[in-house]
Structures are given as structure tokens and as C-alpha cells.
Image (cartoon, rainbow, N blue to C red):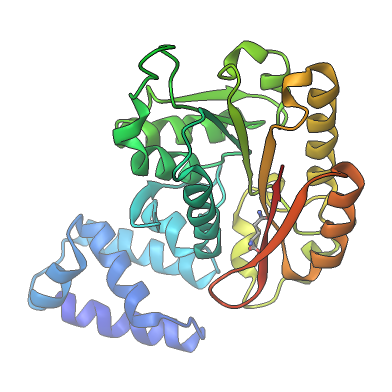
Length: 310
Ligand code: GLN
């Protein structure tokens, strides 16, 4: 069977099951099986497939028909122009999360004070690794007089399995030595190790924590079926979806009372669902009385990011 024939049959199969990007999906899955670029598929339509390739391709197409996200079938997802390994142990990076990168870059720009950056609940590592790549030239810079580094990067996750993927991605981009990956619940690993933080540095906490409320689990639709395949602990939490943010804010308050250096020094970027805007503002006000709060919209025009600054 040729590429042309197999694509035709399988595009039809995807069409019958109402899969949206059927041409793209059929082609990209075939390129995964053949270990070739999509361009090869499109320009070698008479190329003949082996029996094994046909069998493996049908297996992938069937998984796609069952609603499994394309990123888990190919094992990759693009984020901020970088390619990340993904698997069922990590959430698939979302385009709206690129906003965290834009805002983190704005935060660190033109600042001479050292900055400790902590990505809480790192998953695939896409946020901290992207930042490490974009800040790479500056990561080695030390203050001429004090010898203190300009940046220190940390990432935590409660899931050991997620950290394996994050470390693998960091290694691929050759920034594994620039990021310290720590296993633990939100900021716990840092609370137990103050020494990690650069002395007198600003602290920037980045968080795309699970924020989908548990009730949602019961109402998967054709559009949200893909969520079923993602790690549920990376998506769902509690009644209103903001329980983990509250837990994080409590930890930060604890850090601030335990060590006066953190009192007016912590800045946080957190991603949330547009429906949670009023509630997240209320919660932030409760935990951080004297801070500036800004809400940013994503490219689709929805409230998506809370910026808490001292
Ligand atoms: N934005 C994701 C979704 O709705 C949720 C990500 C998260 O919980 N952090 O699919």
C-alpha cells in the first residue's frame, strides 16, 4: 500500500468519527510511524509501506479515534517554538501558557538585582526550560564584585515520573545543569532548603497548577475528551479548582514569616481559568495584603494570568 492510498482511507475513517484536523492528524501520525518529516509524506505519495508500518499506523489511528491527544501519539509538543517530549505522566503544554513566559521575561528584563526563579508543578518542564533557553547567555553571568549569580532556576513537582520527563527535556536542550529539579509538594523542597535561594535576590514563582474543578470530570464532551488521557492530578483539584493555589499561597506566607528576607520580595505569576477571575482575586487579596495585582488576558482574549508583585 502506498502513502497516497493509506492516507485516503484513514482520512475517511477520521472523517466518519468527526475528528477535526483530520488531514493534519493522518499525515503527522504517518510521519511518526515512518520517522520522517511531514514534508516527506506529502512529496513521496507513491512510497510503499511495509506490513508492520501499516499495522502500527492503524493502531495509532484507532487511538486517535478514541480521543487520545495527538501529542501523546507522536510523543512531542511544541511550546514557545521549542519541542518538548511528552507522555501520559505530564500535561500537554498549552498555547495559553506561553503568556507566563512573556510576563516572566518582562519581569526579569532590565533588572540588576539577582533573581531566583521557581517553577512550581513543572510537569514536562516546558516553562522553566523555555526560560532557561531564552536566558541562557545570562545564566553564567556573576556579579563582578560579589561573585553572586544573576539567576538561579528551580522546578518542583510532586510526581517523580513527571520529573523524569522534565529532566530529559532539560538535557535535550542542554540546560540540565542550569535548573535544579526537586521532588515535593509545591514549595516544600524550597521551604526546607532556604540556602537554595540567592541571597538578597528577588523571587519569582511561576505556577500553572491544576485548576480544573473536580465536577468537570463527569462532563467530558467531544471537545474535552483529550483531558481523559492526561494525568488527572495535573488537571483537577477540589471544588473550585483553586485549592492548590491556596495551598501555595499559604506556603509562601509561611516562608515570609519564617524568614524576613522573603517579606517583601516574592512575586508570583499564576495561570487560571477565566471563570475563576473573581474568586482568584479574592483569594490573592486574602493572602497578600500589600501587593499589586494585575490580571492579564491570553491571546484568545480570556483572563488567564494573575501577576502578584511586591
Ligand atoms: N488550561 C488547561 C485546560 O483547561 C488546564 C491546565 C491546568 O489545569 N493547569 O485544559
